[in-house]
Image 1 (tube, rainbow, N blue to C red):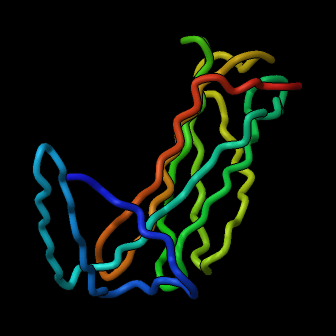
Image 2: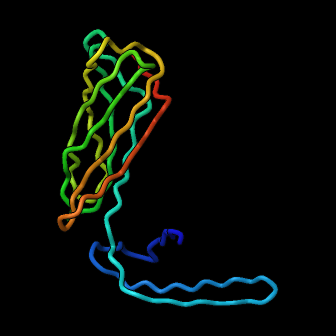
Image 3: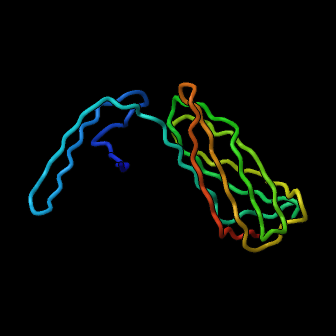
Length: 151
């Protein structure tokens, strides 16, 4: 099994159901072909991206970082989390809730250190952007192991 991304030939795909047809052709000495077609659910995709340079605040007691999220209209944003850690020294978590209007939106998230303080330099961050569609939860992830905290 493998996933295939299908770009739109015009317009935009809508959430719900879609008719999918596929053909696979394999050539190893002789050529073989398989075809299939069925109705499948068109589910939301959540794209999330962390900014590369969080800013120190409160003397290192917190960092603020931008998180950009894109998700389809017709979905509902849920409480989402962001964790920033720095070399086993400082660590903290913040939350945000994506607005689901079909456009890319950037949220500034404050992450307070729960232990020690953040310093200017390299840090790691992980975020899960959560949404709901038809009573199912979907999420996007960004995991950045080389953010540069600036003062």
